[in-house]
Amino acid sequence: MTADNRKKQLEQLFDAAVSAVSGRQAVTNAIAEDAPLSPSLIIAVGKAAAGMTLGALDEWPDCAALVITKYGHVTDELDAFPGVRVMEAAHPVPDENSLSAGKLLFDSIEALPAESHVLFLVSGGASALAEALPSDVSLSELKAMTDEMLATGKTIDQINTRRKTHSLIKGGKLIERFPGQRIRVYAISDVEGDSIAVIGSGLGDTNRLPDKGTSRIIASNKIARQAVASKAEQLGLTVMENSETLYGDIFELADRLGPFIANAPPGVYLFGGEPIATLPEHPGRGGRNQSLALALSAHIAGREDISMLVAGTDGTDGPTSAAGGLIDGTTWSETKASDALRRADAGTYLEQCGGLFATGPTHTNVMDLLIVIIDQQQKDP
Image (cartoon, rainbow, N blue to C red; front, side):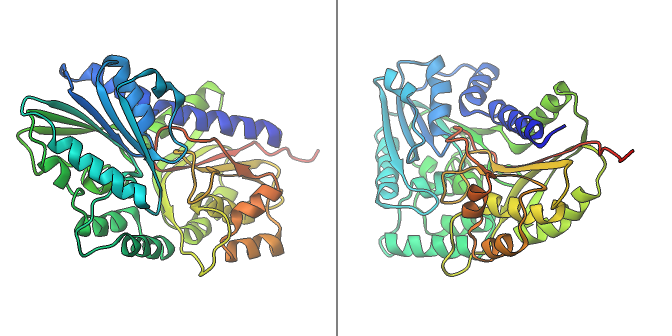
């Protein structure tokens, strides 16, 4: 198999993963499986908010809806529904619109009548996209705290735990203010362990309102990886590994997984999770997936039988428009690649060598995937 053929197959496998956990489809499936509901309001917050809302509107097209999502993650399909209000805000570092979105959530929840029913849709990114702060915490302080946590390689669990301590809406505090009869939460998990208390910093956590609220996870990294495995079999490929072990520092992961992949037998290898990266003072362009892809390429330099894709299922990697990196044995160049990694500028390097992987917004978010295809090596006669 040629490198171009492996690239096409990797793209097909990634597409299968994203389709299986699309916000629209996941909500559609959940509605069909659950008891009947007649929502007075649909609220969706996160990078998958637009897709999740469409899944709900397919069932209740006349229902009012509030959609809070990342800039550029809105779909024109929402224009067909006059009852939809959309607000866009910044991610991963919040901005003024994040605070406006938080106030809008507060006002929308508190204005509901006692007989109301709400469908609340939460996905990754919600923590930054909507926030309400106590009077002694400013937006500039929130931004500085977020920048510091991102730059020093904190895990999403650590970041969201800290966010909850100063938020007036996270950790179930918003839902606690719900005055109606029933609030149902559907969440797409972008965290290790799939805990509703961690997703979006617990924005959809019903623990403070157990008599009125229920929550469930409707899409996860596991479901995405299962879809990759099924698609690989359809393509005639053998899945040798399928695990959620893509956690930890990107360079430690590269040092652990690189030699394993380089010495592994032919087949497909799947890893899911969310690596972390520690940034220099003035980072270049890129994200954790682009950096991990480039670091892994050092371990397969010169190989003609291996290709890898490392990408975020939401279609964005860090503060960039790319999803990740698609690399093979031609990617690594010792001096230039090492320098790019040192400067956290993997995105620039990968773009120059044709290894940048871009999808645009996928309207879902179940962390990251590393997909590896290893061919049967041809032996010299």
